Image (cartoon, rainbow, N blue to C red; front, side, top):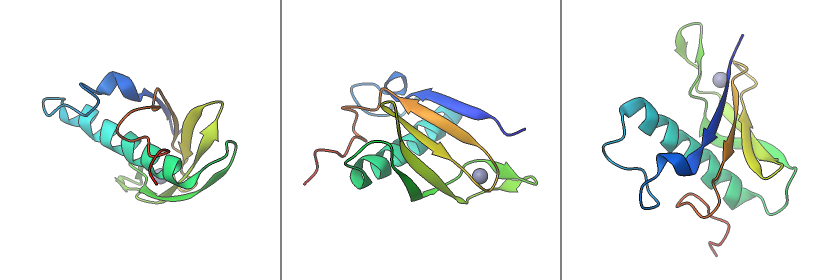
Length: 106
Ligand SMILES: [Zn+2]
């Protein structure tokens, strides 16, 4: 069964950004979550909507990278994402006011 990933984005950050010395798997996860948050916060002005994003899935399907585009939206203040191709999904908390939060961009 595909798993889920729940991420506290702020816990990956140092001085508001992803530190260079973060171990590679954690850094990948942080960058991936950041990309999801950037897309979500740029695209949505209202909660409880979701849509197909331009962020590729980081899961695997039959031992190959899945790379299908993720469905992304908001739910109860969390950014959530799911992949219809491989079934992987996750939620991202503490994304507000991080470098990935693009709600205030013009
Ligand atoms: Zn997938």
